[in-house]
Amino acid sequence: MGMEYSAQFQKLCQIEARRSLIIVGIVAIAYVMLQFFMLPYGNAFKFLLPDNEVSLSAKSGYSSNQSSVRAEKEGEINPSSFVEVVREDDKINDDDDVNEDDNVSKEFDRTKQDIVALEGNDRDESLGLDKPLKFLDVMEDNNSKVEADNAGKSEIVGLEDQNSFDSGLELNESSSFHGNENVESWNQANHLQAENVRKLPDSDLDVPKNDSEVMSVRRRKKVRPGMPPLSVTPIVKMNQILARHLASSSKMEIFDAKSKIIYPTVSDVDKELHAPVFRNVSTFMRSYELMEKTLKVYVYRDGKRPIFHQPTLKGLYASEGWFMKLMEGNKHFVVKNPNKAHLFYMPFSSRMLEYALYVPNSHNRTNLRQFMKGYTEAIAAKYPFWNRTGGTDHFVVACHDWAPYETRHHMEESIKALCNADITIGFKIGRDVSLPETFVRYARNPLRDIGGKPPSKRNILAFYAGNSHGYLRPILLKHWKGKDPDMKIYGLLPTSVSRRMNYMQHMKSSKYCICPKGHEVNSPRVVEAIFYECVPVIISDNFVPPFFEILNWEAFSVIVAEKDIPNLKDILVSIPEERYIEMQLAVKKVQRHFLWHSRPVKYDLFHMILHSIWYSRVFQIRRQ
Image (cartoon, rainbow, N blue to C red):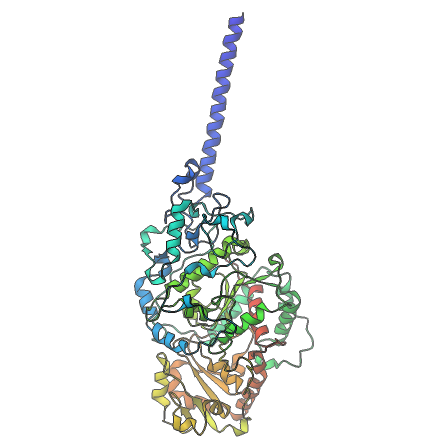
């Protein structure tokens, strides 16, 4: 009897053991399948390997150009997602970069003249243009210091001590950072000059299109520098694009601001505003009021000078510097708690990025773009806010001609306020903001010499003087230089002429100021003409004028197609005197929106830039 019970018990144990093994097997298969379908290729079976066997392959499912970062081990950070290598998909192709940079050395020589003394800060000798720059020195944590006993670990400048990371912020398994071997290779990469950074072929890059991918890589058609655009988008078409954008945004973004802007309840228009210069003055007023009441901005403190937090307040690129200075010092819109912010400002200077990193005569700006890509990825790794929206609530303000290139791909969904507002190189009407290019001569008093003669005393029909940059200005000079006494068209203003009447006096005495494009579509002469109360004549196909979503440029400017340069005088003469008087008055009224003040005032340039960024965010189209 005892033997029979013993046999039955052994049989029952065997059945239960088989059943347990089957259950374990099913669970294991389900887990493997879940890993396979939920994670990118190459990550599914890494949990089966020991840590020291996880390879750092460039073919990993999460490449370094992604800002959605995951953790493999607490306290381990991979700098490969910050610098790594210059990749072929970032570079587009070698021919494209060479073609796109034909005029780089000329542009550098031109902008080099605009470098001003950096107030209160001497230029670091390590940032000399003829010396290598430590690529990672940009990122600096302003809130914590790295302890001496962490010296054995890899130090990623700009990220907090690994232990201070939020447990909810994970690092990418494929970007894990292991051992002293990787520390050594990281330090070597840290000291590489940008022009010597090695490149991986396309075959080594396999970037899957998955839900976690934030920064998409897009290829664009080659741009032919120094040549007319292949296609032209007239101002009428730009108006249609803007109208479609405003009508198609179906989701309220910031509280109920959108509905209040679309259906304003404002009955009395502010007497300080000149209605004709706006598309819809009531809409603008309501949006501006909501911005003042609602908007909160968080300013990232990460990053070292001079590329970050060091505004240039004088010269061609002063717009980005003045905005940076006033935004960082603002107490009404800026919040210290990022969880309360609607927008996030990344305060870099495209001018100082070029000044610090570009190698003269190299005809290669890839290191500038790679630098900004690393900064963006570090921000995404340190804070949860970028990944939360894919960067759609982040913005930059950059005035250098190269800014569209420097922010390509990795800031594709962010709001970019750019002086180089060119539709053909990726400027998006309704998302991006056309930033006015202001040439500030006197940083201590940016309003010095403002204004000009009244219309009755402006005896010059049209005026232009300047360098022959780009393909368009030589055409203008060919048709009009010295051809007509009413058309004061020069190259550089001759000394014999400037002795009698200098450049500023010419603008103050002219009815129309000609503003042709140079190397790029933007020109400081547009704002300069408004400053001296001269009606601007914009000759630049595919240029989106500043604050295009708000202002009615046809009320205070003349927009001429490049092909119509031979008919320029006929176009200007055909404008009735009454119409000119209206436009000149509109120029004087709109002038207040293009002025910098040491302490911002209502409706000034600082508030107009911030309003356009706010307005873009409210009506922003979210790509699914």
